[in-house]
Length: 577
Image 1: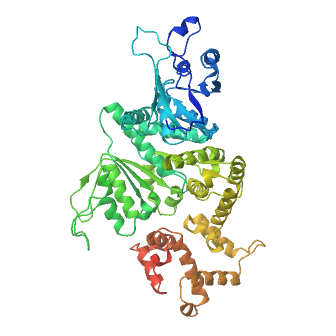
Image 2 (image 1 turned 90 degrees about the vertical axis):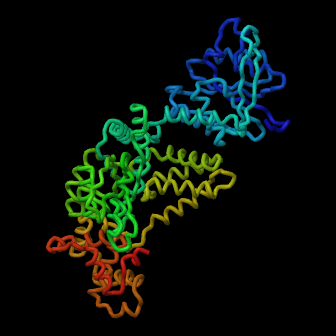
Image 3 (image 1 turned 45 degrees about the vertical axis):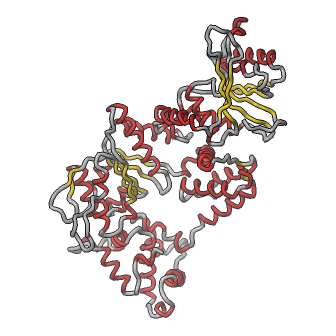
């Protein structure tokens, strides 16, 4: 241990309820790990911090009195801990993390973490917290005399250097314990919301007991992708423990909003060589890659109707035809899907197949937004601080008044958290990056509040059109507001024309703009807003031609929209920039 000779030495550790035990005078004839810390002449302990539960109060009092006899200059300080189960990894780690976060570590003190006492799970958690930098300490391990026939209350001790490679075994032990004790959704849950706890409990039961599709619904940033990954890990761990071998293969994730036009079929279902222009080689596709594993289709509501039909066939018949192939491919995969849309409304609008929705709807879970779980904000702030600290080997914290200021704003009506937990993660990243000396202060929080407030202030043209891409109810509301003659109807010809002009100026040259009639300007501005608020051209086309498309022999809404935009020299991709 490298230390300043002028520094104090403090040892932190659990009370050894078994090894430290003893209430009569015979206790002095045997080795007790905590008391032995005060018996070494070369190890001068100024402070001894002992963690113990209230039921061990009597034993703590005896140890404290015995330390006063063998090492009068050692100040013994007790800390109550409340462990529901000392063998539950998540419970122990959370309790020790809270202890470390609330401990007042001093630069003038050298700290040693006593690794000998406590359960194996506690020892592993201590190791993890020290290695991650949350506890600025070296490890100390005490042990009895190697000869069992020789009474030696002093025993031996060793200060452990975490950089020494021979302790890699402890890392492996930690990973093994983590897999055994932390492989549940509940263990990864950071919430005080009773409804959300029940929801996660139900999802956990379904993940373990069922192979039917699971549909996760919720706003963008509500945590659908993260939860899907945890469900896969739980399913795989359960399969391994019950079957004795890996029965659930890889996890394949795809965001359907990124699948554009004709390439969507190829990405999902693959193609054979020569299936279309440019298909120089064959491609397996993601459904084939997910064979024997779990396929997560995020934003499944963005899939086209043709892709939905092929997906339904693959689910029900466990086979599909790649593009250009007459030979089916057999697959067996478990499906999870995520969406920020109301698929029931999408079915009613003709944007989503009713039969596929019925197949997905075996298990449907709606994840709450951050605004619906404000009581979980403090815990999630702590989680983000811990996560970033572990990644960067730092210990970040708020100054008390800064923490109060941030939480007051975060839980107020001014904080809309439009991006949900993504907004919170980004906010904590900014705060920790800009904070001096790893301490987030009032000025840092005030600047971040201004950033968030500005971030959530949408331009008027967009704030009024956000509902365009959601459902027909929003569309009907907009139509009603245009035709409403009540005093609340504030739109008139001048405001409509001016709003249209502002939108078109961003997309068209001034010379072209002067040639467009007011009627065409209003219509084109509306179409542009719809395009901006939809993920791809096909989705925008389906929305714009929702009624007339049913009367056509070919429902190529994407091509109809493309031709309309070309009349004004515009392209869909150019509008999305």
